[in-house]
Length: 177
Image 1 (tube, rainbow, N blue to C red):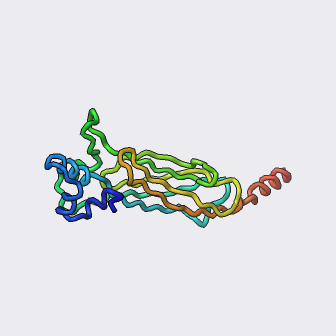
Image 2 (cartoon, rainbow, N blue to C red):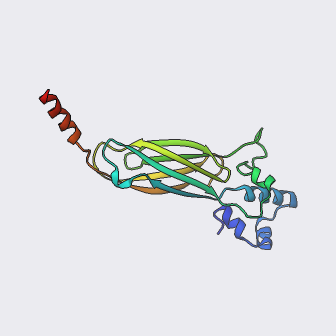
């Protein structure tokens, strides 16, 4: 069964032509769309995952990398990120929403919109939950231009109890004065 653009791309030409049964100019449009459809790898890393304490800032580094053909020329590389949208009134470039949230509480923690040609690295920042414990956050990578290429990843986060020594030291310092 055909469920995605990648399924159409993986078909042999004669099978695809028999399945779609489109005139040549429409088949050319399908080819243009399929060739511009983004195949993006997402990787991420929580900065200092063993040092996350309640209420402290958390950083997650996210890297988006578009899979491209090695034999692409400079003109084709320059067109990466241009959406195949012939009825759109002007050139449309794809955008990607990178979102981190807690789906169990419906909480949005951080959000960024980026453009992507070949590679893009970003840093998401948010405050750790106020209560210590194990959290299973979700990282979403969503296209603003294409259906079916959104991705989501589990981000385990272990939040330690906030260190209260500094508070007690501050109080004892003030008592001595």
